[in-house]
Amino acid sequence: MFRGTITVDRLISDLTGHVYFTGLTWKDLHGETIVYIPSGNFRVRIWDVITHNYKSTTIQELTINNAIISLHVDDKGRLDFIKPTSPKDNPEDEEDSYRNIKLEGLSEEERKWIGMKHRQKRELSMQKKWQNFNREGKRIKARLILNNTRMEIFYRNMQYRMNHVHIVSTINTEKDMTLNASIGGFGGTMVGDGISVHGKILFEEKSEPELDLALAFYAVQPSSLGIGMNVKERMSLETYFTGPISNPIGSGTVAMDELNIPALHFEKIQGDITYKNGNLTFDDVYAKVFDGDFHANGDYNFDTRYYHIYGIGTNLQASKALPGSGLDCPVNLELSFTSNGSPRAIEIDGTFKSGEGMYRHVPFYSIAGRVNSTYRDLKFSDVRIMFHGFTLETDAFRIKDGKLTMDPVQVYDAKGNFLTNYIHQ
Image 1 (spheres, rainbow, N blue to C red):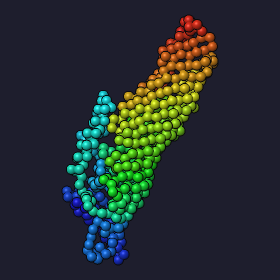
Image 2 (image 1 turned 45 degrees about the horizontal axis):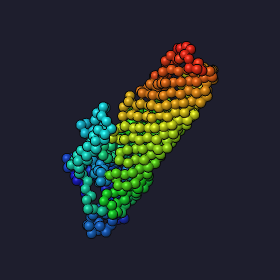
Image 3 (image 1 turned 135 degrees about the horizontal axis):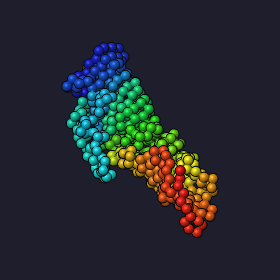
Image 4 (image 1 turned 30 degrees about the vertical axis):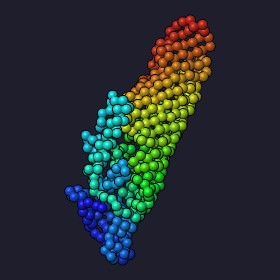
């Protein structure tokens, strides 16, 4: 099952079938270290030892302490062990890294095609390159315990680095594999503070393994997902995955304490998420923004890095959104967010309309217009403010790099006759 050689510095066994070891090293045929385990122990079936009938089920329990393990998982769920990368290493060859492919100027369909081709190329490469472990036709029935282990997992074009991994698993390759795990900080394709995993991987009568797993990701950095925003605020995801390992379906929830994007500050964000075919969908997302409420839905594609978010805001306070403008009123708005993965390509577009309020201590009936935002530039256009007996109109006022600017304001009487211009200082 294991190509290469396995050596230990010290090995102690007893008559009950327990074996204790230190300094276990597994090297491939080229002398490269695949796995190093400082210490651990395993329990064997005594009768197999007495009869010298060693087989894949001879080991009934294995405990590993403080090891470094790298795994590759192919689209059919088959595992292979590989040489660990250092924290500074690129997990892929430069020319084969999807993250280094230039996607600027390409459409969503072109990006999807490139992502598909990349996965096919990578899968073929892994099948040829990584063949250190072969379980074909062999049964495993054992309990596995990992203590404070560092792990890497490569799956498709994604790489996950995980620290302080603690796992308790019962494996029966003719039936299922139970999995209970807690993981400290993690990095690579996704960066965050911790993961918990509970559930099963089903093998019995399946053409490929199927998932029945609940996963929770804590304090994830959204920017690590390549969503095009340098978002520093963390989010937590609770997901439940089912279906074949090559194409699982996930559903769950997302939560963030706050989210800051140019000129918008969201708080207490909660919503539902689903995952299928590389696409993450957001539904019924609720948040507080400028003391009002925001309800949104949208999607994010891992291949194209495009995302689209559509939202409706109610009872937002203009005095919070536009400090220093002199506006004080509740506002309702409809917004759409679009990005192709570049921080400078995020675009926000929509309309807004207010209720009664004050403009520089002058009461008015309503204010309406359009809103558009590009990188650090929030612009309100076709603005119309209706007062008692007169109306103000301006082509635009904007917040750029945190500063408010306003185009000249035209003043009209109740009959629509032009009266004067006002220049905001």
